[in-house]
Every structure is written in C-alpha cells, then in structure tokens.
Amino acid sequence: MELLEKGRTDAAREKFARASWCDERYSPAHSGTAIAAAMKAGAQKDEEYRRTDIKRINEHLEKARKLSSSPEDSFAARLAEMRVAMALKEKDWLREAEKSHKAAARLKVKEGERLPFYKDGEAADYFMGAAYLEAREFQPAGERFKYVLDSGSDGKWHGPADQAWKRTDKVVRALSGVTFGNIGKEIALRDTVSRAEVAALLIDELRAEKLFEGRIPVKAKEAGFIPADMLGSPLKEEVSMLVRLGLRGLEPVYDETTRAYLFRPQEPLKRKELALALEDIVMKLSNDEKMATAFLGHRHSPFPDVEPSSPWYNAIMSVTTRGLMETALSGEFRPDENVDGAEAIMAVRTLKYRLNIH
Image (cartoon, rainbow, N blue to C red; front, side, top):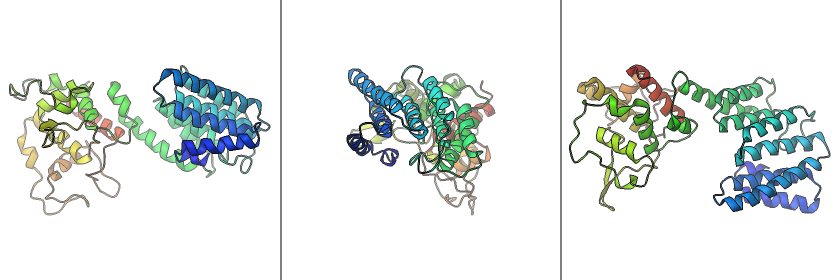
C-alpha cells in the first residue's frame, strides 16, 4: 500500500500478487490489487482492454468483500471500492463512492495494528473528500476534510486533510460569486496551468472580443494569425485572438530552429508572466500608458525576491496594489513559480469584478 501511495503501481501489484500466492483467501491483497489495477486502467485509452481490466478489478473487489474475516478487512475493501470508483470514473461513480463510504463508516474498526496502512477510520472521510474534489464538488469535499481536522485526533490523515482542505478552500474562494465556464472549472484544481489554458481563460471569461472592440488597432497581417504550434490545438481561436491583443507575457516568440513564431501552449505559465498580461489588460482598457512605468525608479522593493530593476517589477506592483495577485505571507512574490489553477481563477475573478463583467 505504501508503494501504491508513492506511485510505484507495478511494484505494489507484485507485492499484492505475492500476498495472494501465500494466501489466496487474504482479503486485503485483493483490495490492494483492485486499487492498483484501477489506477492503470484509468489511463487506458483502448476501450476493449479497459473493459477487460474493469471486469478483473470487479472480481478482486468481490473477493475482497466475500473473504473479509474482520471489520478491518471489510473497511479496507470498502475503501478499495471508493478508490477504484475514483480512478475509473464509470457512470454514477461518485454515487457508488458515497455508498461505500457510508458502509465503511458503519464499521466498528480497531485502530492501529489491525489497520496497518489506513490506521484509523478517518481514512474513509479523507478519501471521500478526495472523491468529491475529483468530481469538482468543492463544498462537500471541504466538509469531509474539515471533518477529519475536527475529529480531535492527530492521526495519519490529519496532515493530508489539512493540505487538501486549504487547497479546496482556495478554489471555493476563487470560484465564489462568479460563474465560470468549462475552462475555468477544468483548471481550478491544477497545480500548474499552461499558457494556452490561461489564454483561453482570459478570452472566454473576459469576453475579450467585445471588451477590446475598437480599443486596439489590429494590423492586417496580424488578423487571424495563429502561431505554428497552435494549428492543431482546440484552443487555437482563443490564442489567435489573444495574440492580436499583444499582451506581454503571453506573446509568441520567434524560434530559430523552426523559423516560426511559437506560442509554447503546453508550457506552464509563470507568475511574472501572468502579472505582465494582467497589467497590459488593465492598461489597454483604461488607456493609461503611464501605468507601465508608474513604479519605476523605486530604490527599494517591497518584495524580497524582486528587484526594482527587474523587467517585471512594475507589472508586479501594478497587480498586487490592485489586488489581482497576492504575495506569500513572507512578502515574496515568487515570480518564477508556476501559476496554479485557483490563482489564475482568482485573478480573473477579481478582474471581472473590477471591470464589471457579468
């Protein structure tokens, strides 16, 4: 199970297989095998192979339930059901996970050595929270994680639940009060967001085509221009529109190897790049070109990791003073760190509010 948590799925399956070879009636081995196999099958693109894998997974789950010789074995089997449902995402998977969670919660388990991996019953609430989070059901996810935190114990799942709760709370705050489209919901939980995704987020959520209409002159050769590495992308129209706006931080760059302008769509967006793009949007809409130099000439920076001479210093000052982006508690801006999904959503949410876009 520990190998499984480290992402070493094949090594974990070997251990589960050995356990079953030693005792084919050992229920936890079937529970573990089902989870490991589901993690593999979840990424399987071939539908025929996937169906075959799912059939074997369900057989292991059935054995895990039937061969359970203690409440602890049954608990492991129910959690396996939850984790398999989350990995495979078959029809009504969240409802099935909820059923398994309720069944696990009814069991009176002896904590500690009898539950060598899960340790205590709080594991059921933690993984139910993870399932809600995977389903983008943020409110119930936060409630499950909070339940673990409020349990009064400092067990194995307290730390992971604390991190997950903070992450969920950040996403809820980012999404609250504004209805976001598919792009926004999709990237909300991402640890990193790509340049193309942020481009689509800005274009779709700000309704940029109408917002910038008549404000920015577009040269004939730029109209309809699509960077070479965006031709086969489903987001090519949004990126093309963004390129026409000429936002700093999200502009295509000429590549000597391919001799073409590339957008680098899959590359994670840096915080300094988002700051430049947001400043440009506000500057273009307010027709205030002085904004680009408003903070230049400072002798001291309020950020310990950004010098006043940095090319992005002015943009960072612009977005932080307007509440579009935040610093860490230490005051660091972390310009070279990747933008996460919740942060991108929160920046666009604040911008929509300031621009009165509904």
